[in-house]
Structure formats: structure tokens, C-alpha cells
Image (tube, rainbow, N blue to C red; front, side, top):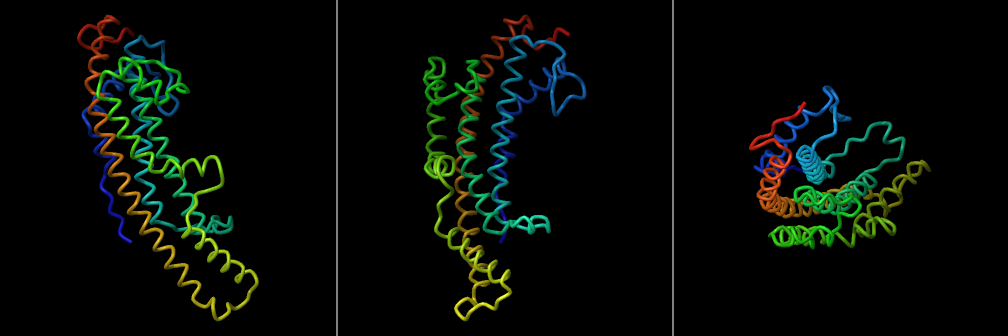
Length: 270
């Protein structure tokens, strides 16, 4: 099956707001960070308020974009399955691989919204504890509420909520409920039992391998298109949100530059 997904993540990376925040973060980290500490970043001193603001905004948008990348990558995982001998010995089947990939995609749809809330919190410099970055806490804040950002977040949430019931089932109950996946699981288990028993399949099970192959193809075909459509919608909403956040980021940045004595441009203090 051909995998042809538009590079939505690249569009987000090239967004003016994203590039601005990353460039500012790079300057601040060069001034405050311990050289060579990339994976576990450390600072040589306590950042001032401007530096704190920039570093937090950079961290929050990086986390949001990582979730977007994971949602995009999920489509490749759906269409690719080349199990190693170790995976085979562990009992990983095409069914378990599909179930894992689909469930992870659904869970990450809610993760994306949570991380978008945290980005809004950072850009508006609300400084809420991460555990308190909830829908009402952030979007009903007086500073946020007077801007178009709540409308952008509501549009984002509307798309995410398409998977809310499935996400809650996965997290709080059993597993993702899908008739085709249940049938595929039965096919896979039947084939495994026949192989372990060393028995020849009965006449009615002669077509089981072909039925299994067809079922896998259908599930992958349907889910690939479903996830592609979702990603197109959700990444479009993320672009709208980033565009709306840009002006507030610039406002806060200029305010904090003056407050911390940097003037018009960032001047690190050693």
C-alpha cells in the first residue's frame, strides 16, 4: 500500500511563530546553558524572567510538535510491519501491532490538546503548575479570554473529541473496541493453535491465511485514511493556534525585555 502523507509537521516547524520561539530559545540557552548538555540540559545560573519565559515557551512548543510528529508517524507504523525473530518469539503478531499502534494514536490525540493548553499557558506567561493547565483554568483566564485564542482552542478540541470516547475506553476500561480487530484476533489465534498442534486445517479453515491477509489490508486501508483525515484537520487547527499566539508572544517578549533590563534586544548578563 502506498504511504503518501503530506508533511504537516514540516509546515508547523516552518511556521513563523515556531521559528521565532526556537531562535529566541537558542540565544537564551547559549547564554545560560552548560555547554555540551543537550539531552539533559543544565543552566549555569538562574534565568531572569525573560529567559525563563523564552525557555518555557520553547520547551512547550517542542513538546507539542513532538506529539504532532508522533501522530504523523503512526500512519507509517500502520502500513509497515517487519517483525524481528525476537518480536516473533515474544508473540507479537500483526494484530497486536495494529492494536498497539491504533491505541497509541488515539491516546496521543488527547495528549496533543493537553500540550496545546500548556503552550497557551507559557505564551501568556500564566505560570500555572503543569497539573493545573486545564481547559477552564487556561481559557477562562481574563488575559486569554479577551483574545481569539479560546476560539482556536475550542476548534482544536472539537477535532480531538472525535476520539474522546475511544480514548476513555482505552485508559479507563479495557481496550479499543473494533469489530474488525476482534475478527482479526480470532483469525490469528486460530492459525497459531493449528500451528502449535501441527494439525492440518479443516476444509472450512483452508482459506484462513487469505482471509487474514485480506482483513489486515482492509483495516490498514481504512485506518490510514481515517488518520490522514484527522491529521489534516488537527494540524490545520494547530497552525491557526500558532498564528494567534504569535502576537501575544511578541507582546510578552518586549514587555519582559524591558522589565529585565535588556532593552530592545536580548543582552545576556553572563
